[in-house]
Length: 43
Image (cartoon, rainbow, N blue to C red; front, side, top):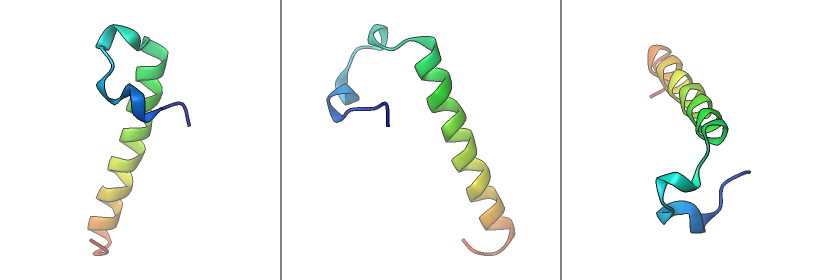
């Protein structure tokens, strides 16, 4: 995992675009899983 709890309150300039892109991709994966689960009636 590339995230630390101390980064929770870190300033935006402390994060680079590649780290942001990785987190964004991960969020998209989770969102798609939730959508699939809803369509399947699991949620």
